[in-house]
Length: 316
Image: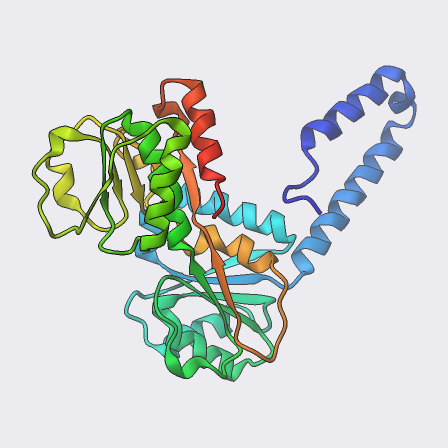
């Protein structure tokens, strides 16, 4: 099944076409009854399916954006053809409170997704509900004593993300330097591959890799900056250059200098993680890249948008 419902515009056009032929005018009530029954049956089947539960907290909802969260909820529901129910807990909720909140939300969901910071709550819930599929998403290290939990661990492929971000930064830099704030996250072998691939669009500058707590002096030489770690000090420079960030924040709320946002939030990874085949009996680990949001309205030339999209599809 496609990731979206049958477009309503096609249905309306089909009805209009039949009406113009005169067929619909003759059987209008019959067709209307059929469409009403079909819609009711569709909604009944959808609402009767076991839901997916996603554990989150109020602060994340504010950061991510409520409208964006609703949009993403609908997108995941359509892709899975089942309801998606957020379970909102306190930021400092203990494992017992998290597990109880999930159990009270729905007794037998199809799957439950937990952010990594609630991993103890996920373990307790799985212990009490061994037949429910549980996924733990995030960048944290898998606890060593989780081997027998049958929990699926979903991690961000940060190496691939940084490689793609670097290629885009090199293209946007226009022969000036690229600065990475990556806190040592960028694997050395991928750095070398990125530098080699710069040649595909004629970029020859050597990128600079820096840690967020280390001050950088030569900002005037920069053509693009990649913020893969917290570096609030950088924004004090007020430079008018393209910026690529790794963040969960709503892209529409960011400064216009930000051209590309890599989002590896729970809500972004959920759809792809849940659509992957799964089974029981062993702990699985899944590696997924972030979902990059290219802010094309902030990029002047269409050909630059096309080139950046092709770089974001690059594989290792």
